[in-house]
Image (cartoon, rainbow, N blue to C red; front, top):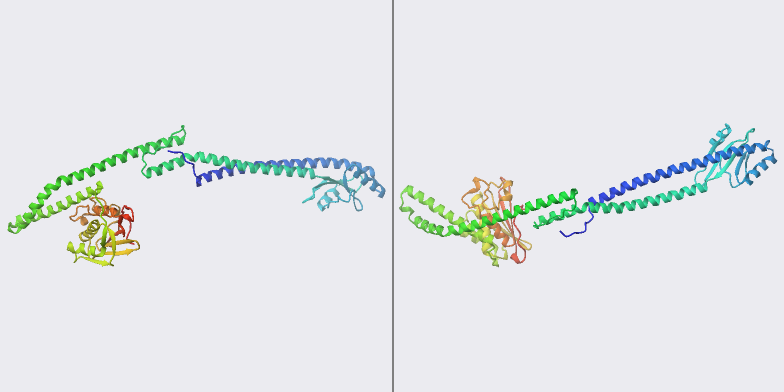
Length: 472
């Protein structure tokens, strides 16, 4: 098989999405967890350093006791000169720099008032760490302010780098997942194309066997199945050809003796009145059986010609309604069959159309009860013939095989037919480019429908008939 590009399918997309989700979630959890751990460690380290520095500054502040106005000013100037911003709370709030006056919460004030070292970080845009305590030997409170802008900026850069890395991992996972899914599902796609090819009749289709993985074993099993199927179909085709040749040979060999029997039976029928009672009954049975044998041989000859493709289509202008009336009148069915419908003209083979309609009406007469109705109507660019009877109907399990050769529904509907009438009607309908269908149910009668193009086989290609519901 030629290698084709595998089109994206639902399974391939699902595998790619699953791969991306696994990689994205894993990378996101790892990056987020690492960021949170590092952030906490950096903030803890900053707090420990600020607390140690605050303890040292509190000891230095004790040297300025007692805190007179002059000593307070010297203390604040000393801290500001050393590059530290502080807030002194002693009979008021005294910052060393007016730009660094963070709000002191009641919780922080209460902790410091209790003689403990307390801290507080600013929220929002305020990136200040405030660590406070009581100056030893006094009730004054000193709060040392540490800026954490550099720490916060570094963490922001780390967060952005981790986010960009996560996006890159997701994109890479999508590319890798799509590639893996495509390569993984490529054997499945090849198998699907091979299965479709076999369905279309390309029985020589095989899958390439590469490697020793599960797909290779699957391809080998598929090839074995395809070979067995090809051999089986070839055997069935040969058997069908033998059956067709046998049918044609039997019909040909029987034609001459049956012709002689028919001539003898015709002579015997003319002299039945001269025979004794028992002999007359035997003669009548003989004549009847010879007639049935002649019809069977004729049907076999016709089905053989149809199988061999030796039947040509001669298109002519046909009055469909008049043809129905002529068929019913010629076969003596006027008392059983009601012909209805509008005058319709179509271009088709009148001999074959007569053969199809005659077989359908004969089937209804032989197996149907009550009134039988044959109707023709124009349906757009097509002509529809319906043959209805009020018989016992046909069970659903027999409908798929109703047009098979020699198939009979049951002994009650077997009658004296050959079992080839509907099969011959089907083949002739196909040659006319039409569609033959049946709708029936037990107790509701049967309707056969012949749907033909009004321009014969030139307007519509042959359409294989089936047993689907065509009655509507």
